[in-house]
Length: 237
Length: 271
Image (cartoon, rainbow over all chains, first blue to last red; front, top):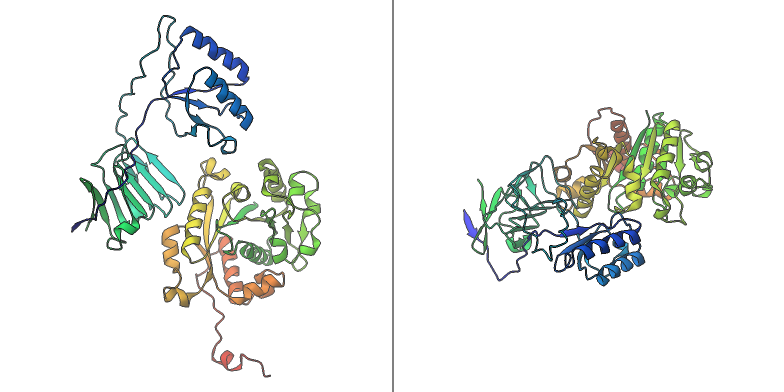
């Protein structure tokens, strides 16, 4: 049995991954800034126009130290789009946003003396499609984020837990939390679960809350797929 | 081999402190050497429930910071000699607890006691994470009610990831203690049933403590319910839970205070 759930113009949230250059300052900061100046002198324009993330986990800065560090980078025309490893307490609203969960992409070589302003870094080759298997249940407050492919959960997903997958999501227990499939723009992704009590489901940025879905499918084994801009729920039995 | 047990829940007001005192009292009466520790620094209550509030001199923070010796801070129960209390400080806050300090105190206590029962504060912040950090066994106290169940689920997730055992690739033994249970209301659908809670949390059941006025009565006279009225329904339920903690297999029942026919007839004393 298939019904199309009422659609309405909805917000879409999409994930995209980009390669960013990460600067990881070391203590003492003064020496590190001198080294930075040396690099900038050798290859002028290296930092211009690049998205740069500052990993301050080695620095463990206080609020004033962090402000000084950001000002020092600004003076050198280095634009920071995100901060990694900064304690929440030292952050201000006007500082760059915090980022975490980055994947290593290897060191980036500095250009030679004669090279001027590299073109923007090419995107990394698409990661091989891999599935993530979670043995057991996902508890409230836990978040499984796997943008590379499918996620399979052998247990249940509790209320207040969240699964985010680039591909499809398979849940062999009950889905009581959120399942967000196809987050990298894969509209063919699906969600399967043996007992549907979800708080929110989303595929390719299109989402429905439990309230939108009503009680019709509550407790049933279902699959969710996308048909154009409609989220379709189907019972599996 | 001493066992460190944390009584935790995430949500406040579900019966952590009551259960800590009652399980401590039950284990001590079975001959085990027991210490109960209050980790709720700044909002201590365990001293009141244990009836030791007028005997507190030094506390956990003093010992953690090295200002007092462990023996100076331990308060021995007046009713059972193998039951002791390590109170929390009421004037400090949870930031005064350090991980090394807590580890040192627990290591010292392991030399003296069979069971170290840590009464966790509500929440998932520093006090709660330090209380569970070194646990071998966790008792997750849950009321048959959706918000309590979800918070317990969150805590179980933390027990599986943020404890010393979890970080060493081992597992903390987890048990569910369902408190304030009323079978009649559960049957009427006014509260979650035992099976509903077990299905969501999927950890073994340690015991079901029935809703009873005996619990509040015991708290108000400063005595664990297992000492104040061991024969009451919650008292018997806590004794069963304590035996299960020791590894005995005890049939799961929900004790009740319902009086028999004679009890009903003669339950009220002649005026």
